Amino acid sequence: HYISHRRRLAGQPVYGYKLLSYKVRSVRHVLLLMDLIGWQFIHLHRRDVISQAKSFLVAKKRQVWHQTKVNCAISAPVRIGVDEMESELDKRKRCSAIDHQAIQGIEHLDLYYEDDLEHTEDWPATADKISRYLQVESFEIADVAHAKIADRPYDEIIENYSEIEEYL
Image (cartoon, rainbow, N blue to C red; front, top):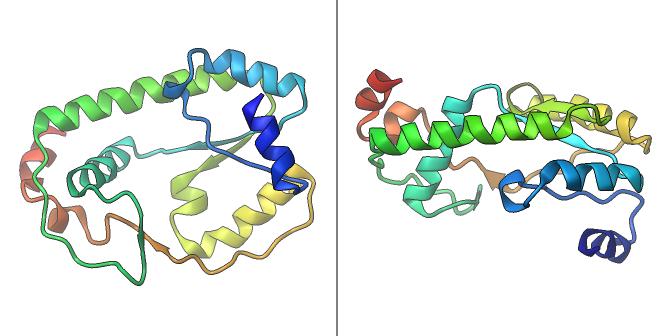
């Protein structure tokens, strides 16, 4: 199994990766199999799917998925079609429902982006929560070089923000 091979190559007591449910045929089957061989799971959720959809569509329009604090430049506003927003929200809701159903009944740690990761001041408590769950020694959070793609309020980033808000 490819992931087990990658875990052995890492040579660390803990190895993680992001399983995207829409990239596997049966995410439930994969999770049950991994649970059977002793994997532990951290399920990262978003409470605010609207903000998640906006963030994704901004990144897609800009064709920038990651940026560092060093090369973080203010970009021109982007235009998002109401049909694009509707489609993205539908997709996010569908994937979220599939993810929740797939992990149901499997021991896991729930993390919420808005509560646990959105603000850097929450990271130490989140790291402690993860350490306790994985039963590993606590670790210090290193300074992160990455910056958010949605670097300003959405009404400054999305050219037709009022049109999108009216739809929502």
